[in-house]
Image (cartoon, rainbow, N blue to C red; front, side, top):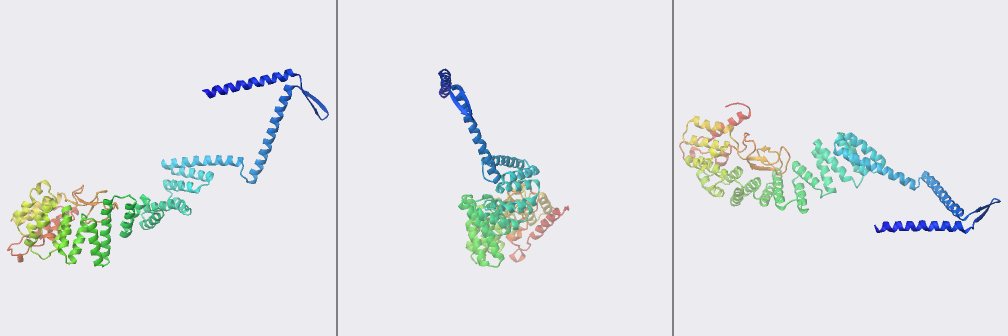
Length: 491
């Protein structure tokens, strides 16, 4: 407000001063006499001031015209001038407008419009590091993968855009299903930007799918160092990769190295069931039954599993059913209330032909959680206690429509696999398999009744029993019924 008052006051003072000056000149009576080309001109004081001002304006306009002509000539010669800068700013404005409109078109899925805007932006801007990326994205939206590939390859020639080009080509190869080329591109992108989380995850997934366990462990270590992975998650996943690396060594025939690798994997994550099984078998192969039992005890305490029981049985494969039942007491005592413990105890007692104890071990599982395995064991108990064949067949028939119990299920896509693996066969997820009840229960059981003879062995007359239970016939009947169900037949 004060500044506005000051400006108004200065304007009034200037007007008053000019008025007083013009009045003074008009009343002074003095003039200016000019002689031009033999002619004499007499100007009054006010006229002289006006002529002077007009002369000044004319000279200024003349100088500006001369400067404009010189600038135009320099513009024609290719030199940078105000005119060229004006046109450059105008082109730049139009180019960035086209670039912004192209980005909006890509975001809205208008591929053809985005391509035209990208071409316009390139024509005005001449900035390929910006417009090439827009062109590639627009081509992908429009479905022109050939053009997108060509543009991404052009980006490889510029150091500033090389990573973008490699990443774009990698994503294209993944979309096409060319995982071999995608793996090579992912390795190149990882070398350019090791801290890029998306590239790390993609490379880790591809390495796991291709069986490059050592490379995958290196990437996992990088993620840990950069703070992108919690220590406990890294420990678990590194154990998974170490286990697969041990399997690879075993396939190559280097058994000593495989044993050490399996033991190392188990030490990294004792609760990883496949690692515990492999480590225990490595100790068994070395003749160290004590360490094998210790590994399996620790894993069983974390989560009871049929594979652990099978490996525990391998420690003394030639023992009698009674001896095996006594040796398994330490394992069973770790998680006595767990369902897997009760099922294992029932199977062991069936092998020892102690059917009442087997029934007591099952308890009310046939009512509260009647899985195919529970019902199959009940059939074996009934057969052992001398029940009619109709009763046994009744239990096996119920097993056909019963839930299959815990299995290896993918936490991401709910796919069910017969054997554990670090990568889901369906969705390719890494370390997503967990031993749990599947969402859909009516599917074949990978560790069903066939686990019974594997774990507890087959009782024979040589064990001192006159009338051994024909457990194998019950198991075979269950497997036949499962096969008929999968084939669409009815029993």
